[in-house]
Length: 421
Image 1: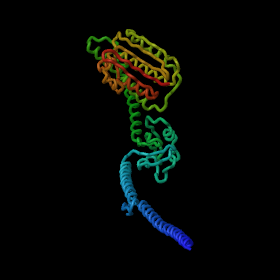
Image 2: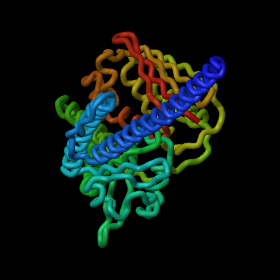
Image 3: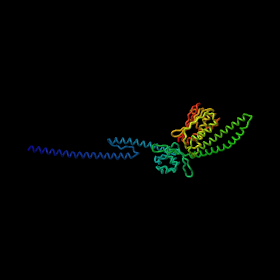
Image 4: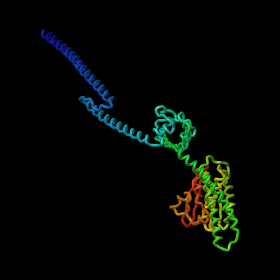
């Protein structure tokens, strides 16, 4: 009897314990569910509030939450505040740049690697007849119908600015365009209006051409009369000296006028009269004309380059004769002059070496300036105009050639021109 009672009691205790555990688990699960539901709702609410706050650019007041969300919000708040301040700085900088670009008379345009217009200032709109609102992201060759302009932009080499002519209603605008690489995939165009400069250059060219012609006519007559009366004998030595002086100065003036006309012609020549010629033959012809006249000097030559070269024959004659005559003027009567024409891996070198008076190192950079003379008295006596090396420099620019000068005062000079093929 007692055993059955104990069994019943144990059985009831086990049933009660199981019911307690079951209902305890259910109640705990429900409580945890309610807790996580409110927590999830709280997170959703915090997320929505934070999202609304982030979307409001002008509102810096962060919503307040408890716990770790508060730390996250504070971190986001600091980041947002920093970004907004940075954005304001960028906006202010852009407005300043935009204001500055409007005050610049030169046009500035930004173009991407696909040649599409990204941005330009008001001057560029005026000079290129653009409308940024309508033409933005359009290809530049569709906006500006000028083959020279488009080919210059596409050209990978932009060492020098390029001049183009654009029609503007009833007139033509002369523009100078300079391409500057910007970042890795964009280029910056600087556009300047050089119409007035072109007009002034044209007037200058015409003036120099006219003045050369007008001066040559009376000078030829003066030289003719001076050469005639020069042959007569005069008792007064002063008259003879005066006539000789007039004769020498008239020759010098004639050379000066011819040199000015030549500079004018070189500067404004539109096209090169290129032909395949042999520089060695041109140099030999120049030497054949000069050496017999100055046969007291010690001449030597080395002609190694005998290939053909595309050039204007008159240009080579001018270069060779000017450098050789320059050495003649600044060496003694029995001085030594060596002329060389050497070949290189990608062209040739023309070199003139003399043992003349030399050039001071500080003056080497000045020798290609117009009317510059290292020795004024010697140059005056030899009839130099001071334009020879200036003319040579202008011609070399057409062939991308380079002039190098080495000299020691009192020891001599070396003039070397490097021609690329």
